[in-house]
Image (cartoon, rainbow, N blue to C red; front, side, top):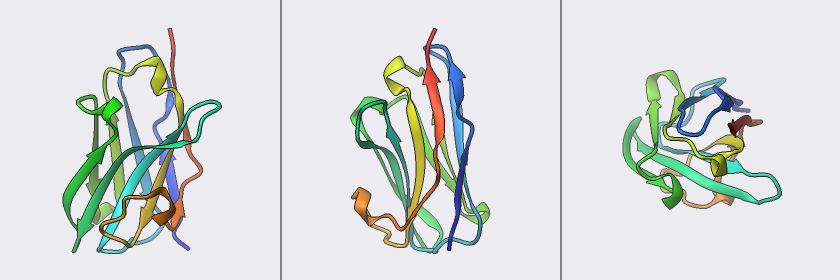
Length: 126
């Protein structure tokens, strides 16, 4: 079974930056969707960003409106690693961030993902 491990979370002041990483324990499908989701305190899991790949080539990215222009998702297919660069962080970004993966290259729904990491905490506070 593929294992996903997130890292890079922590405590940061508003306006600061963090870079999250998600590393796979083994080679992931060449056709796939990788995603970042988050769960804020008392709320349901929410899409942050996804990146679609065919033949190990990235071709599409999607972001929730609240992070557009601030967050950037990227993937190093050779390293089976996906990243989330988070800039100009806001208190409302505080959440546990989860990495997810599926062999479906056009996945769009939370339920489509086959593999999930255990999460990394991001706290934005003065």
